[in-house]
Amino acid sequence: QVQLVESGGGLVQAGGSLRLSCEASGSIIVIDDMGWYRQAPGKQRELVADITSGENANYADSVKGRFTISRDNAKKVVYLQMNNLKPEDTAVYYCNMVLTAWGTGRQRSWGRGTQVTVSS
Image (cartoon, rainbow, N blue to C red; front, side, top):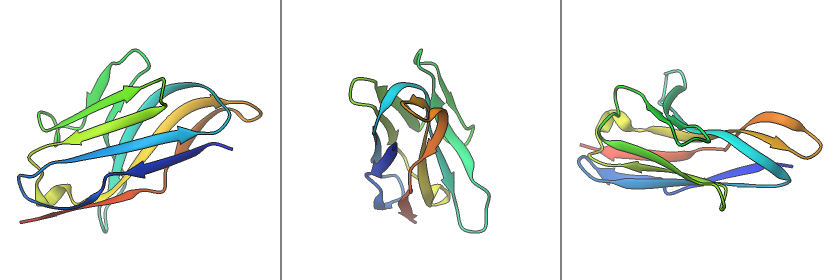
């Protein structure tokens, strides 16, 4: 069974920084795309950033220049460095991976989320 566990969320003042991590575990053969999504109260879940196995990164316009996504394939971890945080970045952040696992094949897996709160 595949599990994704996020860490690094918390409360920070506007202008501050946080680094999110998400580690995958289980009978994983290969991980393709890794990404971060977020969902604010009353809003739909939206893509924040994703990164392919070839290290090509894609960002939402609202975070370009402030957030950086990276991955460590050996550790099965994806990171999100968030700088110059704004109150509108407040949301639950979810990790997402497209991977292939023994017994279950190719699948899209989600973490349970980590809360990020930015105070003004």
